[in-house]
Length: 113
Length: 116
Image 1 (cartoon, chains in turn red, green):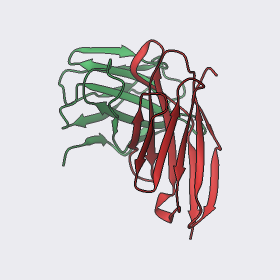
Image 2: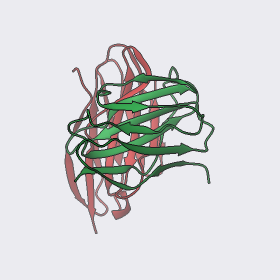
Image 3: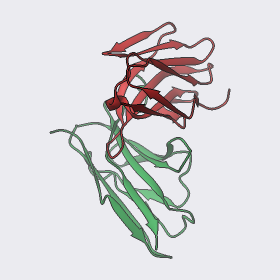
Image 4: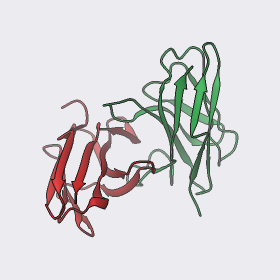
């Protein structure tokens, strides 16, 4: 994998459903993996920054895992609520760019009441 | 409240005109970034700066220029050489230098630039 790729591109779920999305990234020269949530008409906000293989982070109903050896991260949302509707961005710091981030195209989540 | 302020929210450019997008932060962050978003694509880095009076090109710097005369401010100029400037522009900042990868970036609300 040469770029950061997110799947699916969009997702519609019902309130109360649990859901997950995937971020795939180049595993070589990896430094960190960032997840951001971007709600409509707002600025992106950081959810998690993970650096170590096997890292798991949790914030409320949202959690994320990291596999740096195979180059993927999962974001899980348990019991989705309408306020979880947003675009979820994944980005990788790596290669010759320690702090600069390469972003995926995002996963658009819509939670229907 | 600490944060990043981008202005204006909407901007229109005429052919052959340079326009400047403002980005101000009061987070005392050293590193600042400009991104561009096009439909269906991820954020792409235009320019970044680690310290006052220093900046580097990102992945798509052609047709853009920046300055960093003050720590708080990192304006982006979209020049007439940028042939496809219509996009959404986001400014971000981060604590510590660009060499630190485990600090999250903080974003402004963005500026939408359109061609008249």
